[in-house]
Structures are given as C-alpha cells and as structure tokens.
Image 1: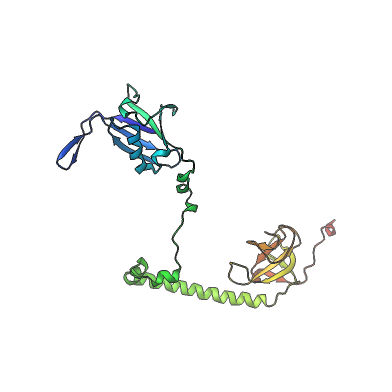
Image 2: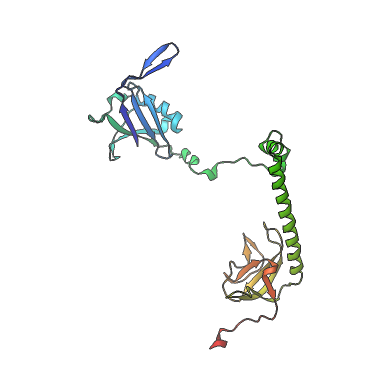
Length: 263
C-alpha cells in the first residue's frame, strides 16, 4: 500500500532560474497490484487522478487506461477510488497524521504486466563459447591479458581435468567391451544392499557423455522404466530400470534371488 503525507516544511526545487516550492505537496509511496514495486514520489496536490496516472505509468509500467487508483485505510481496506477529474487535494486525509494509502490496481484484460513477473518467459541472449571467443573487447580477452597468471593456472587445471576425464572414459570403454546384453550382473557388491539384475543396454545416452549400462533390476530399487528424458532404451516395470557407468557393474553368476529360500 502506498502512504501519502502532506509535507509541512518548505522544500525548494530549482528549475533553471526559477525556484519552485513544494510546500504542501503530497509525498506518496506507490505500490502495484501485480509487480513488487515500491517507490516514493512527491506530487502537486492540484494534480488530477488522470494526470497522476500519466506519472505513475513511468513508474509501474501499466498504461493509464488500465489503471484504477484506490485509497486504503490503515487496515488496507478500500476507502474510495480516485476519479480521473478528482484532485489529490480533495482526498480524505487522516486529521492527526495527514496520511493515507493509495494502491495502483492493474485491470489490463491481457495481464501484460504478468510477463515481467515470470523471468522464464523473458527471451535471453545466448552465445556459444566459440562465438564469444571470436569477439574483441570482451572481459575474457582483457582478463587473459591482465590476469595471465590466474588464467594460465585455471587453463592448466582445466587441461589436467580434461585429460583425467579422457583417461577415465577410456577405462570405462574397456570395461564396457566385456559387458553384453543379457548378462546377469550385480550393483554394489561391497555395499550392505547389493542389487541384482540383467543387462539390457550398452551404449551412449542422449545428452550424456560416455558409455552407460542399462540394467533391469530384479526388484524395484531403480530410477526408471528403461527410458531417460523421453528416450526409451529398453522396457521394464517402473523403478526396475537404472543406468550406470560400466565400472559400477559386476558381471557374473548372479541368479535372481528367491525370497522363499530363507523361509
């Protein structure tokens, strides 16, 4: 809610060579029904509601034709609406505090201002790393010239990490070559709750780097039904499918366990 207060002190604003007094002007805190706007402005009490809307348009963005201005009391209940021809000086003020509340109500049928409350709908500028590197006068180019030590260290770390990932992926491929569809396997052999199943897929996953093993577990302790991100690699019951890296899979004589063996 907005709070308007009559100023009692003399406030002079200079416009060119003329001094404009703001004594008796109304100081308003402006809020909006959709946006989280909160701003303080000072207005001439001789402004009409129509003129005030024009000024508020620059603050809240709602078009004057789609505005309704409401005055509210301390309990935030609507006292009245400000008419287009009504002057601010005619608005009811609290006799003790000379204060009142005003609220900008957006009645745009298209709800245009809602576009600014959901940032996911805002189109964002995107550029690839390659295209950005081709540009001149960027911060990255400046930093590489002026922070050579920092970037040299960072680049070395990235190269070492890339080399480490490359070596790890080569190891994963070697392990994957020994695993084939139909093999019985076990996950977490050294854990308290190992999971058994059958290999259903060996290969890459869309949007992922490297080789993965798709397994149909004997019990529903997995994550999916053989599909990932809308792509089906094999079919099984819900929660019985899982995809893991080859190094996590132990292939061998792991028959499906019969829960009645323990009875």
